[in-house]
Amino acid sequence: MKKLILFHIFFISLQAFSAVYLKVVYIADHKADCGTKTCLLIRDTPTDAYQIFDKEIEGFTYQEGYEYCILLQVLTPGVSEPAVAFDSSQIKYVLSEIKSKVKTGQTNETKKSALSIPDSSKWLLYKLKMKDGSTKTFSVQKAYLQFDVKKNTVSGNTECNSFNAGFTADSSSFTFDNIVTTKMACGKHSIEPVFLDMLQKITSYKITSKLLYLFKGKTLIGLFTRKK
Figure 1 (cartoon, rainbow, N blue to C red):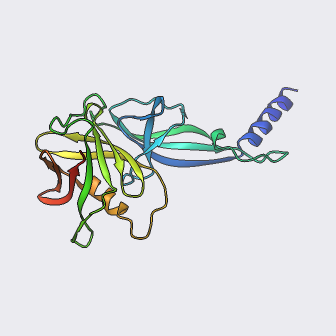
Figure 2: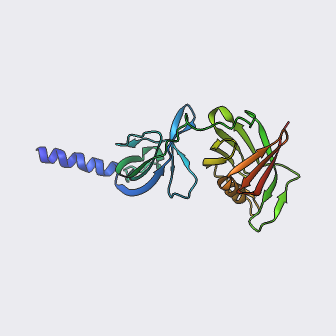
Figure 3: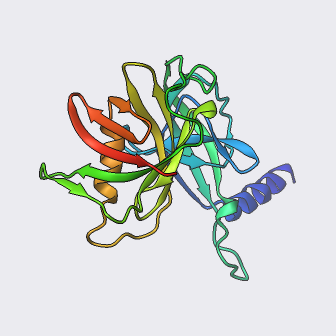
């Protein structure tokens, strides 16, 4: 009788989650706001931009200030009778293995503030260095940056999609990290790929009352004008 009960439980479980696969993900050293809570930031490869992950990972205890590479079990709902619409909220994520855990010391509390950038200031893209080495000037300014200095975050628009990111700045350096964008399809001639590439390559900046210069090394790759 016990064997029969155990088999019945196993069979029901198999029906509920019949598809299981493994996935490697990389987790950032700090979380991001997502609605009324904070969520993990994950990416599929070390070169991808981080994306907000608002699900729970069973068996995983996160520690801020560490970057992780983990192996996940992804359990998806099986076929049911009668057939029902697929519900992504039923997917379960279970920790299989922590492949690496590296201390970075970067947390939301320890990130430096760029005190010379006015809080809540909004900056419109005026010039952008393109991939062919030319510089494009924008008479109609759609792409922009808006800084929340207290939280060390920046939001804005790529011309096509909205985005959020963190930033670290002091008197000699400036970098964006954990860039998360919406996923609207962009037109053939959209500057979004170049704009996002610029954000990832910035190493320093210069600011005046009306202009924000962004550099890669000594090369100017982006120029923004302050919106009044």
